[in-house]
Image (cartoon, rainbow, N blue to C red; front, side, top):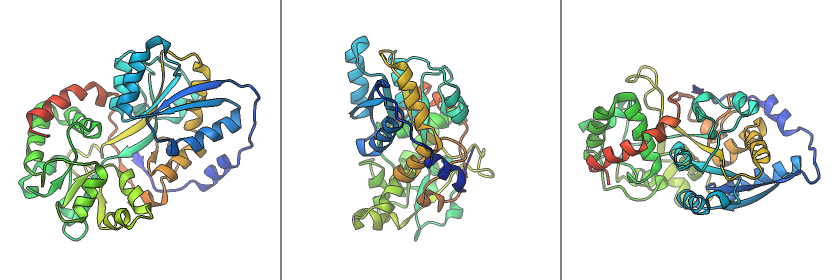
Amino acid sequence: MQVSSLLPALAIASALAAPVTVQADAGEVNLYSARKEALIKPLLDRFTEETGIKVNLVTGDADALLQRLKSEGDNSPADLLLTVDAGNLYRAKAAGLTQPLSSDALAAAVPDTYRDPEGHWVGLSLRARPIMYAKDRVEPAALSTYEDLADPQWKGRICIRSSSNVYNQSLVASIIAADGADAAEEWATGLVANMARPPEGGDRDQIKAVAAGQCDLAVANTYYLAGMLKSDDPGERDPAQKVAVFWPNQPGQGDGRGTHVNVSGGAVLKSAKNKETAVKLLEFLVTPDSQAWYAETNGEYPVRDGVAPSTVLAEWGTFEADDLNLAELGERNAEAVKLMDRAGWK
């Protein structure tokens, strides 16, 4: 899949201008969301305005919400879970918390790669995890693949967050899928040897460390960099301006499988008393206007083809995304964690 920077303006404008139809007493949906309220509430309000369906929102940390759902069991009031990373969606499914859903609208809007093969979850927005480099110290021609980050030329030059982070676990899972477990462990061992410092902080901290000269490269999700570039805080914006994006594993680089991507996504819960309205909300979140809002507000890529990324992301150009079905990231998560432990990735 190629992630494009072209804006189908007429299609999006038409979707945004669609007439609003309010239905009285159309029901409700109880939503547990690992997305922060500011990153989802405006869309939920629009959904209620258009459909009359009330959304009862509970937000929290992804792990905490999964634990809450396990504790509540069949008595949970939740109908729908929104969370980040295919690994978390897999964990919800593996814990028996979700149920399969069938929707022609979701099947038409979201590529198979970004949906659970058994229908337990669907991707709603796309996040890429490329290499980021110091503009003043690294020539992009020196970069190529994730695998190349284990090369001794990068010794003492790489910043990346902890192995406990699910984003890194999913990245390693994708490398296992591409190269096999033995090669992935050898790569992780080489990466650890090339770290400029023990892992600490989040993705924004890795970007700031590159800007400060503590390392030359980082691996981070693009929406963090986009948020920093759009920030009114010079402490966020100024470091981000010293960093550029490199898309690894593109055609002509290694196996050319594409840059690692992941999703934020949704799953209808087994406890759902309002399954129909939960599915309607998911369908709403993949409409062109919702996808355009996600792209501009959250700095994530639309999961739906034909909707452009934000202006900031468009400046980084197009890239080929790895077409691995993201369900594999969850299936290989346990193997990835053990492998990272053996490699000494703290």
